[in-house]
Length: 54
Ligand SMILES: [Zn+2]
Image 1 (spheres, protein in one colour):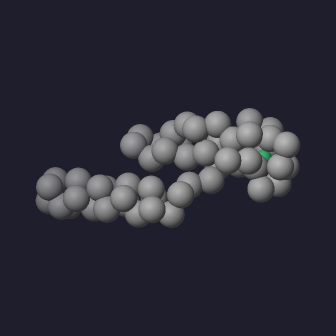
Image 2 (tube, helix red, strand yellow; image 1 turned 135 degrees about the horizontal axis):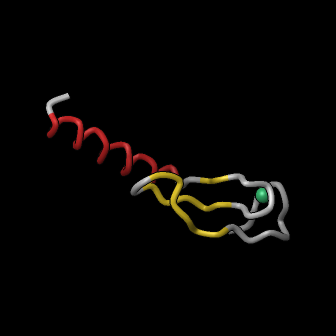
């Protein structure tokens, strides 16, 4: 995947936060997250909170 701001830059796969994969741009420091990936992560966070009884 290429950076939407600079199509010459290839994004690097990294982690935005624990368990949340994101495509990070080394040039503009932007991070793009796949909506499905984000929803899966968000669901996992909710599951964790329920288990902790928050
Ligand atoms: Zn960029």
